[in-house]
Amino acid sequence: MPEPQPNQMQNFPPNAEQLAEMVRDAISEPGIAVELRFGNSQKAYSLVAFKDPHGSVCAWTLRKLDGDNAILIWNISSSDQRVILQQLSSDFKNWNEIAKEKQFTTSQHNLPLPTTKLYAQGELRKLQFANLVRLISTDQASGCLELTRTIGQEEEKAVVYFNDGMPTHSVIGVTSGDPAFLELVGWLNGNFTFTLGPGSSEITITKNIDLLIMEGTYLNDHVQELLKMGLTPNTCLRRAVQDIAEEEFRAIAQNEQGISRTLQKQIFDLVDGNTPVHAIVRALSVAKADWMPAVNNMIKKKLLAPPEVPLNSEEVALATADWSMIQAVDRSLIRADTGAYGYPALLYFLEMEFNRSSRYGKPFSFLLLQIGTKATDGSGKLNPLPQQAGRELVNLISRLKRKPDILGHYQNNCFALILPETDSILAKRFASRLIEVLVGGPSLESVAFSIGVAGCPHEAQDLATLIKACVQSRQKFGID
Image (cartoon, rainbow, N blue to C red; front, side, top):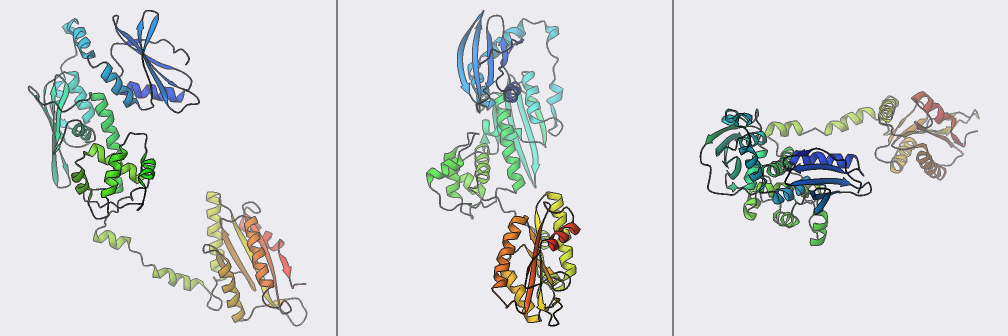
């Protein structure tokens, strides 16, 4: 690893934002070490993030600085800054004592002014929960933070207790501790009131604020994704796969976020298309912070089907289309004598396909079939096929073509095929197959035909040139 460039030293260990920035810098410039130094004259440390150009994760090293020497404390490989924040939180959990000593020796005039009025009461849409708890932490305030919000017709309440600025106990409904705090990070609307007091003697929150906010933001991403899918507590999830071995399930459910595969399997086993989500959650006694990422991951990995969102009566009416109208339109465009689209309809479809091809760069081909009975006067002209013969020809071509291909009349004695998503090479193969069938059909003594094929955009960039290329490329059978 190359030596990092020396930088200034800050007083305290890096927070979540600084670690995230180190990850971004290391990934954007692989091969260059990113360093952050922290501490004081008695204790100094160097944290380095390094991304190998040929590797996939960041390598972190923490060293204690002692003059010109650097003593290695640990090496960790991870691109998830939460892992590093958790390790630092454990290593330097007593660092606040140093902060208190530093503050005690600082002139009272240099201490920050009280900011209690900012978080005494207000609205979460104006002061986000993460910033709210940071203000309380900055003031090292003790007391109770009460929050309320309205979801549908129901009011939801929560409380967070603080001791000397640190959250110690949190409750939302039946959820408490860290999981309750994580849910609150996702509250974007609602009201809050902070009451100064002795705090709570009950300790249920075990992680520091930065880590809780980071994990809460991560949870909220899952919550928002599931809400967009229409997931509610009453949703009855369905499996996307019915029979799957345990080993295969665990391989598919594997993820980089550390979502428990055991919990995913437990939820999967209870999903039957009839049991609502709230019943599954109650049966497993799991918090939202655990089951929502698990469900979202299984939907992404196609182990569970996305939720089916029920429609109200107005939406049902709007979503119901009268598909019989297609048949009515189709019949108005198709010639009754042959069952193929008429000449005007064919030109309309041809222009639509050309516009689509031009817009999205997709190829298509045009096949021109001129066919008829030979004139008895020896002039070489072709007369229209008898009506029955024309219908049989349309039926024959319809069996050979694909469903998206469009068959219609072109001028007199001609049929044409529009072949979407088909270059001229594939179109010529189809033409060869059609020639084999026609040659093996009616006697060429009385019937003659010619076939031409051209593709867009390789052989023509406009419709006039495309049709001209078809005419010029014709192969003639029975025509002098």
